[in-house]
Length: 262
Image 1 (tube, one colour):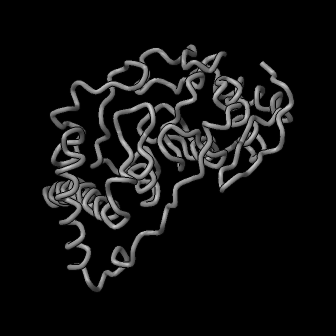
Image 2 (image 1 turned 180 degrees about the vertical axis):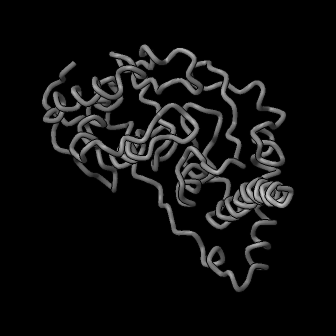
């Protein structure tokens, strides 16, 4: 498995070529075997002892395909992207939060998984991260809720046009196309229920913006970086936040009614 010594990461036109770091290979293998092998498998093919029946299945690292990236479709993730996934876990899946691993452990294991795919040795698979701006000011103006409502209404129209076929009109992951969707490995895949409190791409608005902008490689979720402006992507998020608030508000009302009944 150990390849010829890799050069230090090089950078050209804002593209960082994060080749595997051979100095962390043995450390990374140790961390992987203790924490990851049971699901992702000895060969990194997603066929560990615990993988059977997991939905979604563990990531197959041999393909070099990663959902959660800050890079364009088809490109490998940055080291920061990989470490973020290990640190945060993936909500709604079997991928846990590895909060107790040291920074060196996390860096080492993210270097080790690169040895499972030759894509990490080929420059054409790297790309500069997309620009991920902060949310616009109208998200933070509680004194002017009409402004947020105006943008959310635009987001609703965009959602109906671009997202509802898979995610459904109410964001429940039950759109007309949802029953036939598959991932890159031929597994049936269900669109995310966007009403849930936690979204797999991460807990922050910027995480949602990143997923909408980059798409999720290996899934039918495309990139909207070229088809929707930054403003439109934020308007989509404003509407999705409304979808997520409605179930929580309904649950809160039921809890209040139950308490009054007691």
